[in-house]
Length: 328
Image (cartoon, rainbow, N blue to C red; front, side, top):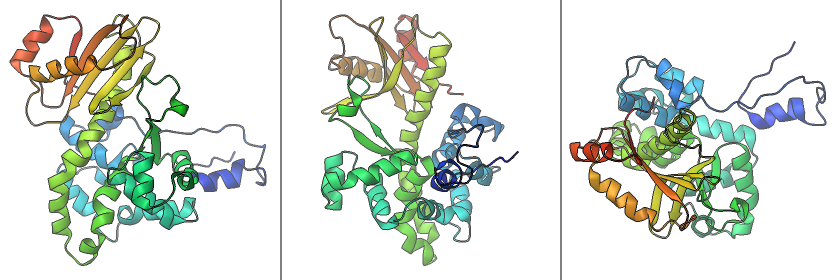
């Protein structure tokens, strides 16, 4: 028996699955494993608070080797300094190493990921920032999607996602997203011995520019478990986000058969979420066009810091509102 396990996808394919491989046609099984879900993350860090877990997950994602490097570290910024900013550690240059093994034109891919990490998510914005025609980016975007580094996302209400013109590109891998947002732009500072300045920059933007968005991903993962646990008198079959114009909604789940629509917000704040957030969400709901004349609306609010007494009292009087504080 030969068991091959690795993260360098192109090499694994060329050596075992490709037609020219000596092992072609001889494998008895193959598995494409996804990163470890957040719900099991606490098993690596017993006794940690949920906020501590989310902060670490925002950097490591569900990659066991990355997680191993952070075990025992309760201060996220000290862990980043020890594990990521350490120039002799493997995490410091990990994205460069991975891309070098997977693609031939590493400079082009680095430029593309850097532009997306800077907040350019529309194809037109990406092509403008890179000064390249959008048609010239297709090959690179497809490769990065195949490598699970980025993904194309459309509003969950779109009937034909592949043809939708509302597609946005986002970095899917947590560590690569973090690295391109904070490490890659500051490598000159790190290599000149000014890591403390970089840590200050990370402290200033870690939550608002990074962890808050990872929290949304974690909440959507929780939604599937809530769906299976029967939190609603129906089961939704599609889950994602909704956006149009200036309106953005963190969670949108559809039950096409029953005409049910769940809308939600995820707040990674230091203060409890108040009733104004629910009222704002109800107003946003009126702009969502999906089955506007024959649907039933439900609401779910996630907050890492709990909810105000007013909102708790309001939710207790309604059957269409769920307040969710615990993710695990």
